[in-house]
Length: 402
Image (cartoon, rainbow, N blue to C red):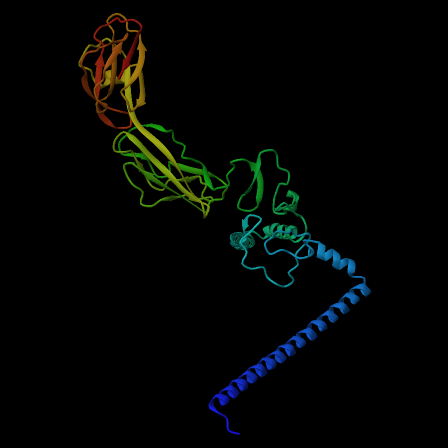
């Protein structure tokens, strides 16, 4: 049978509809298969859940599970990483380390650790010094070590008593005593006590103020020096001199363990002019040097008194006045009582300059000076200014010279 074109077109459209229907049916079948697979999976999970519930009921864990589900913080045994829950016991990290720590109780433990390392170095150094300085100090180190090794540390302090120290000579201090190392052992003594070596005394038997002279002051063997020391003994001691009229060719070494008495082995001359000269002792115990100086003031005389002579004074007139003293100054206040025909006389070396006189509160009362050459008993010669009062018979009079 032959189909027309129209009939053929209709058949083709019917065939396409059948194909579309077939595709629709095939898609439904696939979705149905997927749905069935999901139902089987859900059924399996429900079955597992029923078995879990049965198990909880059989083991008596139902109440625990209910409490767990109703508690907002069911895991109190766990430590929060944000630090919200405080520790209720000690934290044992076994053989592990705690690293990357900031502050512990407000302290930077990395800095504290460095300080402790430094302290350990100091302790080690101190221990070495103690061992080399005095074997008796080993007991002190051992005592500290024993206290550190036991439980006698309270509040960061080592608990010990003074009786634990075996290298201390006196274990019965009194109030305000301090413990000081004397170079051999620790001793208790008053505050500010020193055990540093020093010269306690140095002497040569001569006075501090002496008459200026000319030439040799002391011949060989006429000066004797001696010394004593604190915290000795001395290991060396020698004497030098300064500002005298000559120099020693070598220093004078004290004998008898540098204490003397030791006599001079060279002459000593007067200074070239009035002034101060000195001997200095240089001593040491091997570690602490010490010096001590004897000063001698070599002065000439000044004179004052009463005379009936009005002018043209001689050396004998000045030396014959009633009063004299060794001095290196023109300034003086003195009182005299000149009678009828008697003047007040005052004389001193010209090198000290001219003088101003004050009598009864008023300046003046003395004549211009005369110059007189005077040689003293030690052979020293120099010029003197000689002043006399303007008037005689002044009676009791106080004079100030400046």
